[in-house]
Image 1 (cartoon, rainbow, N blue to C red):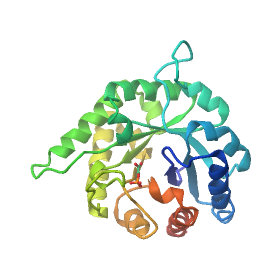
Image 2: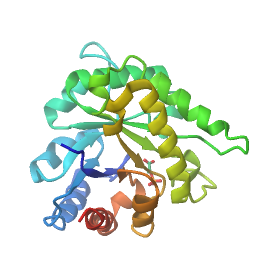
Image 3: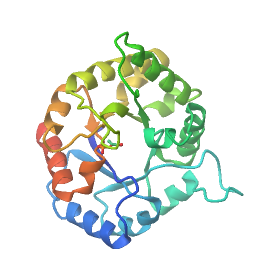
Image 4: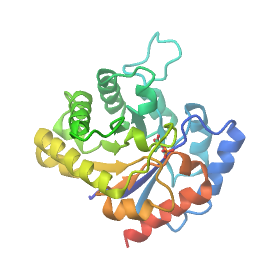
Length: 255
Ligand code: PEP
């Protein structure tokens, strides 16, 4: 079966309380009963997962990180298996905000393997800090893909989602700039080529999505002209009205 288009909300370290998380989640759930063709995922902070899971089956839950190994003596960590057991089915890995705290491609690779082992689907984030005139940013993303996906089998690859998130366009970046669908399109084509060189025809089923300040105003343009199978809004996913609008735009394009 062909993979559905997908909208993934990355709540990051928001909101401040479980009560607010339930309210936001509930407001989204209330307005998506007509959605049939779009896969909806929300990645809240770990500690809200269990409660949100009970509110709706329509939204699939994801985590924002996972430990690169199995359970054991690792203070403060949360394993992929624990996340699966609590109801998460996706996990964001290699996000630029984690990489800024020291996460390397090698660590992301271990996290991807641990996540697959536990049954979670990784959402692998890649993206350059800045664009240079000599196009070195393509090579930067190529290295991220090669190192993060080292040793991943052809059988597993179709389960992964690649999120192209240029750091210069993400809302938390000081002096951020707007990306346009052409930026996403050229990188999506490039990512697809890297994947097909490495994994052959299985790479055709990998969903490539775009994230970087995407919102209800430019979602249609990115979905139609950005060469992607979905979107990963951060800030806009914290506003139920905006997030639902993005989902409905995606659904309408799939009719
Ligand atoms: C993100 O960092 O995953 C993201 C897409 O955030 P925002 O939409 O806020 O730029």
